[in-house]
Length: 207
Image (cartoon, rainbow, N blue to C red; front, side, top):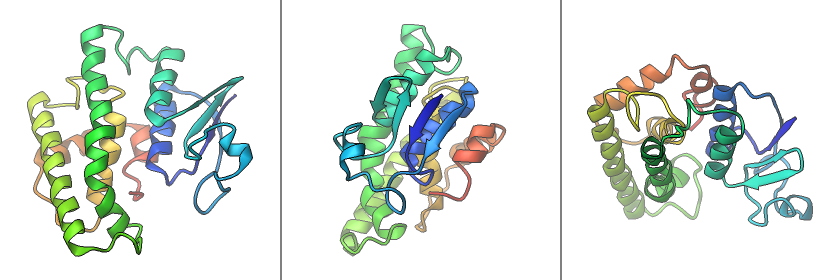
């Protein structure tokens, strides 16, 4: 059976859990990470030298990096409806998956660590304000795209790209800060609420 190593409170682990829910995949989960089993041990580093979650074991195959994992699962377990085979549609999906990691994630990291994790190393008011402003700028890009599609982040149909984007949108909504009025994002989250994976692993009160 597929094994997922990582705690459910991790946004990156929840990407994998939600993908499994969409694909109807059974799995076993082991809690690793802060507050649970330490990833900074030889046993875990043998699986992921970065000592970060999530990691999956699918038989003898071991894989880390959340976006690589969700793509693998969709490819391995007949997820054409989630991750289109058509090169153009897949490219649109990949664009938003990669943007979430390279741009959106970076925009909120300082503010999230300060306002939610209460990290002592992330309490500079100017940097918090700058991170919040940058986060809002990136969420405005999400708003514009959703207003354009009128449905989901990569187009008219739910896709693999919606999983990381929605999790980041949820993190924005759950973080105590000023929130701009983003009606397309609000409608998007309401639309996603029909999905079991969303209810279990996204808009569940966990940022």
